Image (spheres, rainbow, N blue to C red):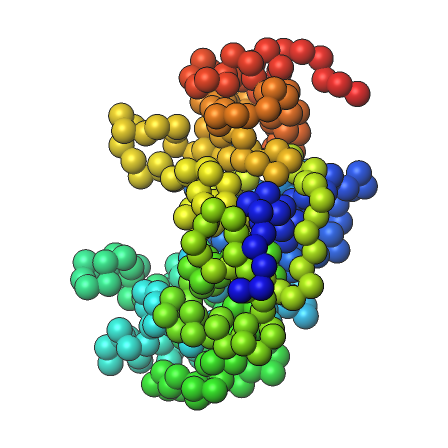
Length: 414
């Protein structure tokens, strides 16, 4: 370990790597800007919860400000394909360059690989491959209708209560044998043949047994993924770098050690922490951070809760599945990043019928600076405008609520 960084230096590296350290651009956000922001992150997690907006749209807003969400959708359907959906950090949009490196690791981790399909399921999967070969994307319901297959579901060892067609589609998807052409308004995957996304991919004539790639291919793929995670995280321990693409921890640790021994990564310490951290050689340490962003619960900046607690002193848990009486902060809570610290959090809901962004709880962290409420108010106004909402309404819940309501009642600064 060649050097020890201060916690503040580590935080600034992490914030800069995620593209959050600079003021947002003044010019309207175009497709190129969204593509560059996405490339920096390497992936964006998808989630169906729509309390504020779909989870995948928040990270780009956090970094670029108001933009048309259709621009992110376009990345996942334009040709040549720059972004694909696949299993990574849960269901995610990932850079298409990572797809083949992810398949051997993710097909064994997520529900629906071909090894879980019985003979009838394999016959159905073969019929699906032939159906998708015409190049037209289909949802599970559309595929079932064309195949004359009832959309019934059963309760079995899968635990997902899927129909037979959905199970076969997900098995093919997990194996990397088919892909998707985005999602529809009901958040359903629109499955498509792999060669429609990757023209060089062969058109399969049958459903082969899953054959893992050779050891060297798997190893080199893991190296590329871990280096990408190091670039996106800026600085990270074995645990958080492996977690970025949900790679196995023990194998990742060995690969990271070898990458560091070969000079592809540098090992450093962080004052006050026992972990060994990795970063790309030549990583710059910004002198300061100008961040001001609300971060969605599935934002890659806060993916790894252990990392955020160690580097930022910010304890963060998603309480969606916590009983109401046991929630500490609320249902859909977004951390607020200001400068180089996570200084507050708000429980938000977009009430579209009334045109209001509801702040159901607002909480300042210990030691939050005096301008926290004013800066958070400005950020909430910006988010409301982006969502097409007319006003921000604050409830009385939380130690920051009164100050935030006062800031919102004051005229906006020019």
